[in-house]
Length: 157
Ligand code: FES
Image (cartoon, rainbow, N blue to C red; front, side, top):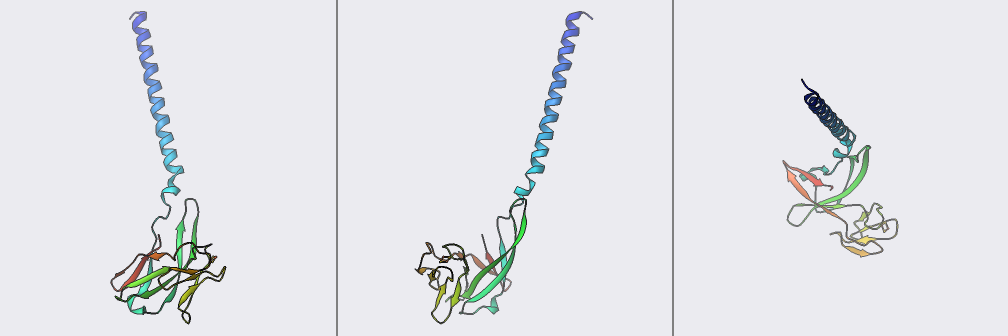
């Protein structure tokens, strides 16, 4: 064995060691990134809620109070959410969010007047959620609802 082949072998060993170290570092970094960001991948993105049996709904609005589990990354909590549900003219569920589009207060259905009213700043909404008056910039949000096996489910978004 001469000096040239020894140097070449030494260089090859060094290159292989550096390659293995780089691969090991990349593997550890990748696994660490997966571990650290795991809560973000568990964020609640789609919340479907059960509003009860279709037979419990009528043409009159009914308030439905829900407790909804929310995972927003590193924190899990339970939010209180109110929606109003009734049957439309075709007998299908109509579900409106009770969250005022101004600053988020919970609106109340006033059956005597036939409108939703916000206790915070006087916002008023029609039975279809359209703004009738006050500061709210947008209608009440209509939730996608469907009937499965006689039960009403709605998509909170
Ligand atoms: S929060 Fe409803 S009108 Fe302001």
